[in-house]
Amino acid sequence: MPVLLQVDFPFSGPWGDEMSTALKGLAESIAQEPGLIWKIWTENTATHEAGGIYLFADRASAEAYLAMHTVRLKGFGVPQVNGKLFDVNTELSAIDRAPL
Image 1: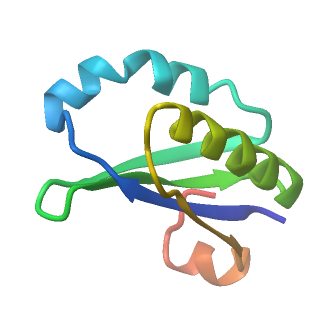
Image 2 (image 1 turned 45 degrees about the vertical axis):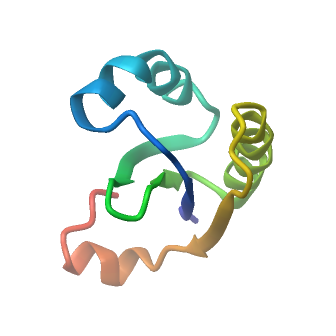
C-alpha cells in the first residue's frame, strides 16, 4: 500500500529559482531513494518553512527515508523536522485523479 510522507521544517532560503539551482543535486539524490514514487517540493517564504510531500511504495521505505532525511537535515543545521506518515486510500484517490 502506498504511503504519503509529509515533511516540513524551518528554512531561511534560498527560495524559488535560487532554491532550484542550489538544491538540484539533493533533488537528484532523493530521486534515487528506495521506494520513492514521487516528491513535491514545498516552500513558504512568509513563514520561512520548506519541506515536501512524498509518495512511497510502502511504509518501510517511507520510515527509512524519514529517519535518514531527519539526520541529514539536522546536519544542515535545521533545528526541528516534522514528519507525518499517512496510508493512502488508492480507490478514493483514483476518483480524484491522484497520480498513483
